[in-house]
Length: 478
Image (cartoon, rainbow, N blue to C red; front, side):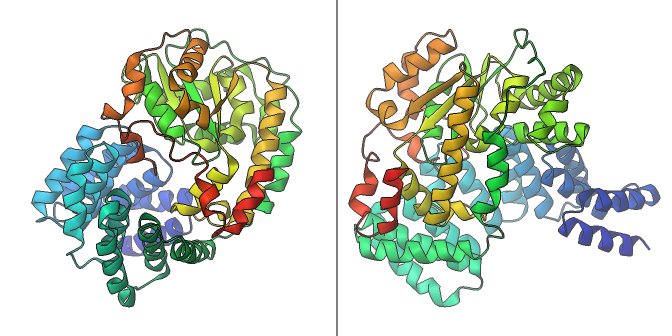
């Protein structure tokens, strides 16, 4: 009986029917309170729904009951990472490394941990060890990371990539291999081959997308027609923690800007968090209306509850500082909600040359299967939606939205940072220019790039590649 309930709950969970699955797991626990399968199922659901405190509690029980199971330990480490507890994350990984005799899954997670926390020298030998292991997927991901970190070894990595090609087992592996080949050719300044493999990588990823960017048109049209909210925004003057939102397109330099600002004594960086989207979802559920229509039905109590939920989740990333950065680019879609929840919060609209943005998005491997990440025509549509939305919001809210340009940031950093800090009534600190020396955690594609000093090499980078990627030309007119 219990086995059939567990099996059915797992099937529902795979279909993302989390509430129904959770009900079945709870039925199992009513009959057998310590059932590890049910506890692990609930933990998996909690992780999927970003309920990390619940996930940690459940996973700790599972790990105690199943000391010979590796996956719950890896999940526990990821949950600690998600709440900003790097020390606990590393403790779990080091324990798993010894407990299970250096399995490749743990080696990879530990290498990634070192990468995002700035210990690149510690990450490299772990990635290199994985090249000798039997796990094909992890071997490919390790090779991809090494190709990005150690460009001087690109010929060696290129040879290894071609050796691995006949053993590719699925589409994801084929995609990672093509991105790796493209990266190696880019490092070797062989742009024709770079463009060819990059096109193949993006085409493979595009095949996994289940929607078109144009499908989002009704949503963005609604955003662009929003009127000022009838409900007065809440009074956020008494908030002990002040959020700073960095919004815009991906690959505009948000990790760099966040790293610079987080080097200030009064500012912390939470990175790209789901909490604003979760807050909006909760408001939608309370009003039984979708976003942004739900905003018109909010009450002062709901607005206060939404703000409290968001701040409670961001608090753990604040490190007792007064300001905390939320740098999820897509939060530009939620500016209308931000303005009700945190009317005085600084919103930084970070811009960059559209051609360089397009190249950087197209060149990088985004794990999410979203069409504007892997097709330049789809990306052009998305940029159009973003620009129209931000034009409208900037007119709608004449204060609190500051536009910053990447090119100005890297060429005149002190002036740009001082201007931003003045908006927060903070003084400039020289530490902000020494950002690359800080061991701050960065969970984005720029985890290694923000460890370098400022440079101008990424400005107008698309110009040299335009002959090999002719579709980049369309972005000049956007």
